[in-house]
Every structure is written in C-alpha cells, then in structure tokens.
Image (cartoon, rainbow, N blue to C red; front, side, top):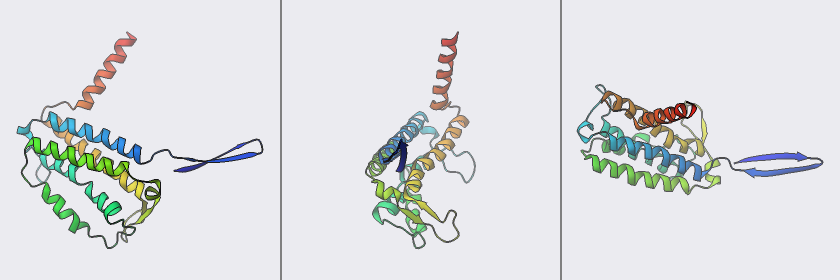
Length: 197
C-alpha cells in the first residue's frame, strides 16, 4: 500500500493506493503454477528420473520440491507469525520437506501434489491482509538485507518456483522438448509478422 498525495489548487488530497496486494500475489502465483503444471504434463513419465548432471535434482525431485517448498513461508508468516528469524530452525523444518523429494511417486501423483499444494498456497496468499504484508521480519545476524517485509518474503514463493521452472525448461530442451512458453512466443511472433505482410 502507498499513500498518494495530490495538490489541486489550494486543496491537498491524500488517498491510499494499493498497487499489489494479496489478490495480485495469488493470481500471479496461479499463473506461475499453471505454467509449471503444463511442463509437468508435457515431460513424459519415462523422463521423470532424468537429471541434467550428477548432484542435480531429477525432473521428479524438482517438481516435488516446487510443490512443497512454499510451506516454509506459510510456517514463518502464518503458523508461527515470526518477526525475528534468529531462532527459527530452518534445517529442522526443511529436512522433512527435502525428504519428500526422495519419495518415489508416479507422474500422476506428482501432478496431483503440485495441484493440491498450489491450491493451498494460492488460498493462503489470497487471504493475507495489508497489515500482515506490511510487517517486517528480522533475519539472522550476518544476512543481507537484515530486514525484509513479509510482502517481499511471500513474493519469494513465486520467484523460487520461477527459478526452478527455468531449470525444468532447460531439462526439457535436453530431452528434446521445446518448452510451451517458447512455442507460444514463436506463434505470437509469427502471427504479428503475418499481420504485417
């Protein structure tokens, strides 16, 4: 939320102006998750164990990681409502989440997990109030920046997924699959060029 002050003649007006709130967070997250689901559907199940290099997650592990990692932000901001992370047990919380990546699942089970966890994350984001989004959280000593708003931290749910989706799109290329977003862009360009001709 921002305050916009305008002066007209001798009058001064101040209005609240929300430019990006919980509904926008939820909607943008849904767009990102839908694109991730498209990738998950387009990669054949026979390639779900593909890893681009030793030490890297497989397709399946990356998709499960994407599905469950939002729970960290839910724990920090909703369940525990932490305002200082110096005593937050990151490894104690993340250990079971990372173990989920190792659980054998079928393609259908992974897509169902992405869908159900996505619905929970979207509902959580959509229900946040401006007061909560504007609160700040102090990071452990030595981290930069030392303080972030909950809004910025919650945007990381989408940003983190986009980071891993980029990895998945690279894996698609390595598997001989042209990513759907690339195909869509090429189609738009072809249509624009045809319209000019």
